[in-house]
Each structure stands twice: as C-alpha cells, then as structure tokens.
Amino acid sequence: MPAATLAPYPEAASVEDGRLLIGGCDAVALAREFGTPAYVVAEADLHARAREFTAALRAHHEGPGEVVYASKAFPCTAVLRVFADEGLGCDVASGGELHLALHAGFTPERIYLHGNAKSEAELRAAVAAGVGWVVLDNVDDIDKLARVVPAGARQRVLLRVTPGVEAETHAAILTGHAASKFGFEPERAAELAARAWQHLDVRGFHFHLGSQLFDLEPYREAVAALAPLPDVPVYSLGGGMAVPYKADQRAPGPEASVAAMVEAAHDVLGADKRLVIEPGRSLVANAGVTLYTVQSAKQRADGSRVIAVDGGMSDNLRPMLYDADYEVHVADRMEARGEPAAVVGKHCESGDVLVQEALLPDVVPGDVLVTPVTGAYGHAMANNYNGVPRPPVVFCADGDARLVVRRETYEELHARDV
Image (cartoon, rainbow, N blue to C red; front, side):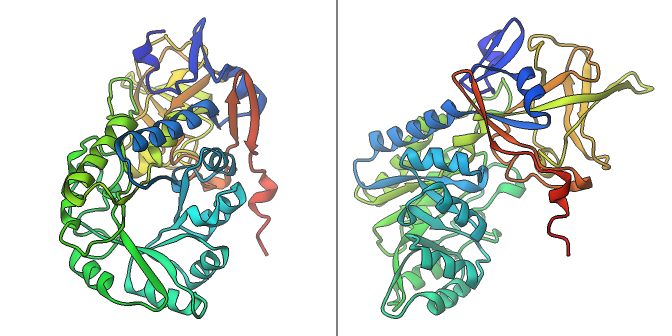
C-alpha cells in the first residue's frame, strides 16, 4: 500500500495482502476478539512521540524545561503510565484526571492542575496530594487556594494569561483570543504577579492558544504579549500542535513545533527561563484507530450510499462538535475504493455522521471499517447516549494485543441509579 495512503495511521501500522495491522495485530482479528466499536492503540507510537518531544526540547533549549502531557486528550491509565515512564509531566483539568494521573504513577510534583472552574474540593485534593503546580485562571482560584493551603505553606502557581492572539483553528477549540473564557488579561496578570502572597508562590505565566494549530507564528505573538509582564522564571507555552487527520494533510511535527516555540521564547524572554511545553493531541492522536462493524448498507433514491456502523457519536463526538473530517477504510481491503458513501452511526440523531463522504467499495453487514487518528478525544469524550456502553481500549505491540480498558456492560449503565 502506498505510504501516503497509510500516512494518518500509526507508524506501527502496516498493510499485508490488503489487511491492516496495528502493532503487528490484524485489525479484523482484533474486531472479532474484542468486539466493536473498539479503540486500538499502537503502543510503540506513544513512546516514540514522547521521546520526539523530549529530544526536541533538549536540542533547542539548554535551560530548564519540561514536556507535560495534556491528559484530557486521552485520560486512560495505561496511556498515562506510558508517559509517566517516559519522564513526562502531566496536565490535569479536574479531580478525576488528577486521580488517574496519580494512579498511573506520575510524581505529584510533576502534575499541573488546570481548569477555569476548579472546586474547593479539587484544590484541596491537589494540595493534599502534593501537586507541584496549580495554574490559576481567576481570582476565585486564589481565594479557594487560600482556604486549603496549610498555614505556613506556599503553593507554586502559574497565572494563566489570555494573550489576545487569534490563531487559525475551529472556534470551539480557540482559547487564546480576547473573548476566551480562560485566563487573565495581561494587565491583570501583571498586577497579581507583582503582589506578595502568603499562600502562593507565583513562579510564572501560562498561555494556551487553542488546538490543531498548523501555523506556528501565533506562538511568537503570544510570547510577545507576555514580554511586558513582570520577569518570572517559568513560562508554560501551552500545546495545540496540529496533527494530520487525512493522508493529504501535513503538520509541522514535534521537532518543528518545539523549535518554533523555543526560538520565540529565547528571542523575546531570554534563554534562561524554565520552559514548559504541553502536547496532548500530538502525543496520542495518530497512535489510535477505531474499529467498527457494518450493520447496514443502503442506497438513497438519488443514488448515494449510506453505510451504518455499530458506533457513532457515543465513541467519536468530534465530527458533531467540530466538523472534524476523517478517513475510513475497509480493514481487510485497505486499497479498495469506490463511489462516495456517508458513514453514519447508530444513534437516533440525524447529525450522527462519522464521515460525510468516504470513497468505499461495496460493503456488507459484518465488514470491519477502520477510522484513523482517533487516539485523541475519542475515549476522552465517549458517552452513553442511547444507552450504548463505552468501547474498550486495546494496546497492540509486536503482534500482541492486550485489553487496557474493558467495554462497559449494560449492568454498569444503571449501577449508580438509586
């Protein structure tokens, strides 16, 4: 199979006699063994991306620095454990993500608690666990921290700044513009950083511009917006690096992205700062695929085809939230193409469409379809709409497959009912 056709798939993917292999495991065999829908992850890709980011930061920045996994992209214990073992830090945006990160083995000092609506209970849990960093989003964060930090102690914090930079991405994943719900305006952040706090150790500033950023120039604009603020030792430059979702897309990649971010920081802030890089999607997205089984195939009156699978918006909400565009293939006929067809989900919503126009050959119920680049925000956003249990997560490496998250059961759907 041409390399360009396989480009959105994991690096540890291959095609043999038309059949897709993930980490050496046959996709159709995985579907039969674990059922569908199923999230399948090439474990080697997770390790490879972590090492790429770490190496890039070391190569371009001689000062202190850290690569921190934005865990909201794929908050799964097995994924988190890979990145903990690789020496990354971890961003968490809730008490639940904090629990997962600690359970996965992250050292508390390397955990950063984010969020624009942190509860006092979440802050108390973070302080009790010894979390190294709290990223303050608003004044209410400060008041709540004052109540939970023990007398005589001080919590290291970063102030999240909204730099007012309009990066080019979908409006729903744009976060650094002036109208963002996140962070302080630069002037307010400067004022807060200059104060003396009994319970806060203000070490630096944080910004995040948004997600799926192909253009790296906005990072320089954001760093420039921080330059007039008080001099601090730590700057978190956020994440948001784009990944290719289709074979014809090209993204900068870890090396180019980190190089651009670090160069901007060095030029504007100096080379001695502690720099924090926060990749999420770009660590996990291309490592994962989702397997589906065709349930029905029909032709509309206008001649167009509709192929319905056993998943949909309960396992991949991104097409509905962000108009995300995916490829899809038949797992045992990867090279085969045909007339356009809509691949739709099983849910009782007209908008439950996974791929608007896929060039697929004729398929029949029982065929296995595969969608690449679902390692980010598939499992994270999975839900129980229409009472559908959430899918399993399967790790594949060197021809071996192991279940790391089991499929929910119908019984578990009502286990919390009282």
